[in-house]
Length: 329
Image (cartoon, rainbow, N blue to C red; front, top):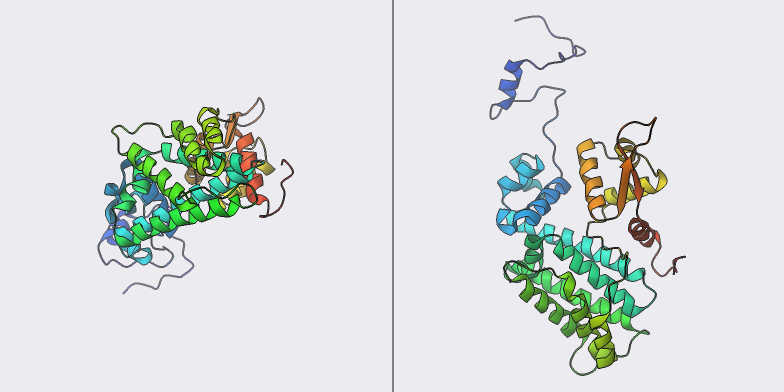
C-alpha cells in the first residue's frame, strides 16, 4: 500500500482520463472535492417552458426536459411527481408571467376602459409569441388531466373576479346575463376557436372585436362600436415574460447602469452564468423592454444596454406599491 496522500494536495489542472472513466461508470463514487451535478427546479421549469413554446406539450418528457436543462434525470423526481406534475407547474409559471404583465399594463392606464384594453393587448401579444404555447394554455389545458383542467377554470374565474373588482366605481353593472364570468369565458371561447385553425392566425387583430364584446353589456352598443374601430395605442408595452427576481434584478441593473455591457449587467443582477445572462438579455430585447448599441470608441467591444420606454413603464409599475398613484398618471 503506497504512502498516504495529504489532503492538501491539489488536483492536477487536467483530470486524468482514468479518473474521468471511473467517474462516468454507473455507481462510481465521486472523489472528495468534486460536487455532484447540480440542477434546480427553476432550470427544469425554464427548459420545459422552452420546449412547450417550440413544440407543445407532446415534447415534454422526463428525458427531453432534463436534456434541455442539462440536469441529470434522477434529479427530476426531486421536484416533480412526473411529466404531468411538471406540465402543471409550467402552466402556473407562464400564467403568472402573463398575469403580472397584464396587471402592469392595466395600472399604466388612466381609466378602467383603457386599462382593460391594454391588459387584453398584453394577453394577445403573449399568445401570439408562440402558437404551441398558446394552444397549450387555451386548448390543451381544457382536455388535460383533472388537476390542469381545474387550474384552468380557476384562472378564468380569477380573471373574471379581477374584471368585476376593478369595474366598481368605473363602470355600471353589466346588463342581462353577461356577467364578468360569462364575458371572460366568451373571450376564451373565441381564442379557442381561432387557435384551432391551421395555421393559427394572429390574435392581435382580435383586440377590437373582443373589447367590443366586453364593453357591450357595460356601456352599450355605441361604446362597443367605438372599440371595434379604435386604433391601438402607439408604444404600448406588451411584455410577456415571467417577472422572476432574476428578471427584475436585470431590469434594475440596466436602469442603474445605462450603457453597461453584458458582464457588468450580469454582475449587478447576480447572474454568474454568462450564457444565461446573454439569453435573458436577448429575450428582454425581443420583448422590446431593453435595447442596445455597439460600444463607442475607446470602450470594449460589446453591447451598451438601456431600458426602452416600455421597460421603464414595466419596472416602475412593478416597483410602485399597490394603491399608490404613480407619478406618470
